[in-house]
Image (cartoon, rainbow, N blue to C red; front, side):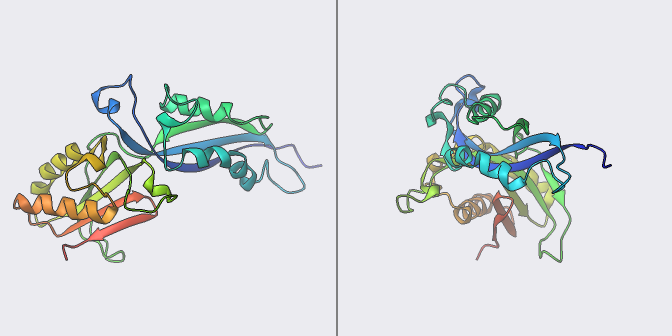
Length: 237
């Protein structure tokens, strides 16, 4: 006879959303955005016939209506999140939005994909990916793309935990300039930044390049990643 097995599962989804926290520090009180990571946790007895607690597709489908409301959205304008657009407030909103509650649902964790500080990391050259030795860091910002047609999700105010990478002959000399870039973009609504009124990854990369060039920095590469699967590379052409 097969022994009863209890297993824990995690299904991770990301939402790209904007918010501001009126109770937070001055940076948090500004309109900005994040890539929010939501870890949905399940627990239960493994079904001996199929070998799982619950189908991962069922977990995803259960939360799909709530995720659609959040993704590429402005949390402060979503009913139930107006006054508590925090990580804990978002977690409670998600749990309250699932009714009836599935037997397998254990809970969830909500976090932010970025570092939430200027934390530069030096990466070695990657010949396979055709990337030079470079410095990378993340910043948190909101944006909208008003040039896009009505109905496009990116036209709405939303946010990302951006990942920026940059290369120059002198990486040590580059780092202080990247700290200034971080201060100019982090916890901001990019549309309010001069030159970023239409803040696509391409235009952010060009903006960074121009700002560094104007300071005499011999920049050779800028990469902007708004999600783990979407990156723009710019070499100054």
